[in-house]
Image 1 (cartoon, rainbow, N blue to C red):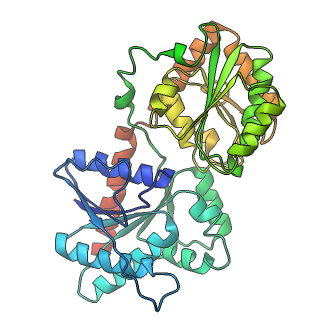
Image 2 (cartoon, one colour):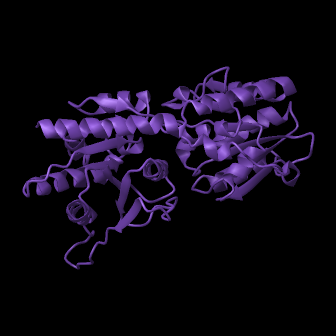
Image 3 (spheres, rainbow, N blue to C red):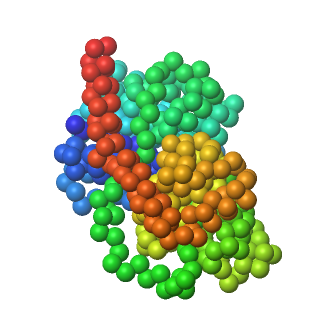
Length: 378
């Protein structure tokens, strides 16, 4: 198949998943056309089946805000005609599904039927999409997609509760390429971060309020009182200054390391013993999955899609949002005994394998075939 993929080309979860999906599909023989305003950050273009088409928005003084949706829909029309694209897969409802629908209608005028698959990722539904300004357009775009998917059962329920949806929603989870982690590092170099008798706890995020960064530090404070440990904080964002102040207030300066944005996430997770994810809301919990595939158990909240990834008492533990003491106690329970830690590490990896890319990608292929079949019937 020739598949057009529209996504945000940034480090955000939806862009990463869309890029990884496209690369996996290309290895399975499909011709993939990424159509967006910048090359996706994780895109490996040295592949004869991968193509990138940049959407440019001309500057007109007439517009206070330049019309990206208009430029994108026009680009989609041109690329579909030029490359004879069979199916369009748009990630994130705003503005991609809306632009995709406009492209579909323009192509119909020329006798071209283009099925569109829309994948809902999270904040496009629960935050931005639910805003009164955007809700009618988002509802319309979802209902006029040929196939709609969400990354978790939790997000599917949220979508059905927030919008008047007439389309079926297929749950296709996020995924991970476990083959990239089979070799691992021969030397994780733990000594760079901690003493031999210290446990290493990590957290990776964009340091936004929804991630409850203060809770990460308070959970660690509970743990370190019982288990000698270090906390590695990876990321940057509006909550970082508050986090640094809280570390100083609790007297943890020698035990907490802020690494900022890092390109060595896998190496950091390689030597981690525990991962903290006390988020207020996660539509899936991709950060938890990335920790687990590195054999790192997870302490998390039970919100959103996280319980579909992190299994309580198996790959880690779940607790109520804000229950710092419970999450800290669970952390101690995992870390204080070597045999217990070893069991949780093994379980975390086995649970991660259920989301392997080779299991999930065929689900998308089946939905592409379904969309093509339905549009031919129409």
